[in-house]
Amino acid sequence: MRIDMTGEPGDPRRLNEDYAAAALPSSGEGGAVVVLDGVTPPQGDSGCTHGVPWFTARLGGTMLQLAAAERDLTLGACLARAISSTAEAHVSTCDLSHRRTPQSTVVAVRWDEERVEHLALSDSLLLIEGTDGEVTPVTDSRLDELPPHIAELRSRVRALRADGAEPGERQAARTAYVRAVEALRNAPGGTGFYTAAADPGVAALAVAGSTPRTSVRSLLALTDGAARWSQTFRLGDWAALLALVREEGAAALVARVREAERADPSGTAHPRGKRHDDASAVFAELDGTHRS
Image 1 (spheres, helix red, strand yellow):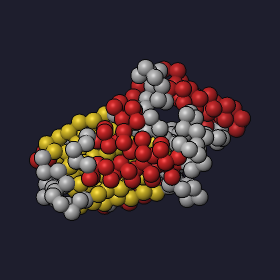
Image 2 (cartoon, rainbow, N blue to C red; image 1 turned 90 degrees about the vertical axis):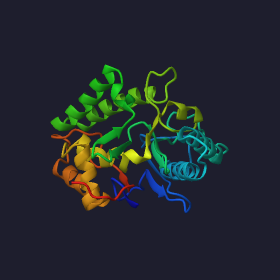
Image 3 (cartoon, rainbow, N blue to C red; image 1 turned 30 degrees about the horizontal axis):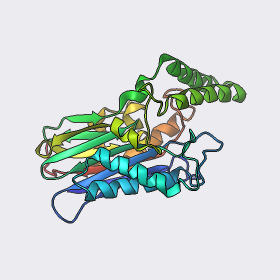
Image 4 (tube, rainbow, N blue to C red; image 1 turned 120 degrees about the horizontal axis):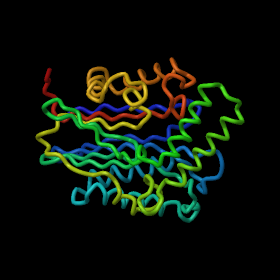
């Protein structure tokens, strides 16, 4: 068993809004990994006095504890309980109905001698490497399946940034895009996408499943800031990304992402929402047998 993890804020002047941790219980062959990516709110009131880093640490820590200790609960049930517990911790001081209340993506994976369970909500992701070397991404694709007008607004934001438009014009386009996305986040009726905030019911909407333990060699949980190596900069496919982490470590992956970000500071060649993003990764090698 090998665990390797890293986390780095996109801006050293700000707290990291990601959460990444692993648990290896003393009994048995099991373990669990939880990775969260906090949603950075636009400037302005969020209705919460605590902030996103507090929220992700609280939610992630509770989720990890439940996933590791409560083996009779599904990961979805663990997430629902973690959301409820976190909400109870600040409902008396904060407005949890606020549309910008702290929230996050979630990716979780848990294993024992029989199976490997996974869960994904929003755009953090999990890579599962099989014993045959094939790498399968587990993703919640709903953020990529938003209505066409959202893609058009996002393209306009990126085009204005690349063209060096006036700050006021860029900000107006960015505000329109953010408002359109916010209207679809956790929207009723299955018309948008979902993040973990204050409603435990969202846990039932996560992508979940399981794989026989004997079929899995390793796991890699990533926030989208770390997944940029493949998704944004196209430096290799998912198998190449996992191989990089295995050979050079999770910190090396984030270092490579930072190099790519610095080489394209304006996002002209590789459009993205932020120049630098919080980046976290947890690698768990369940079967250390080398395969070429």
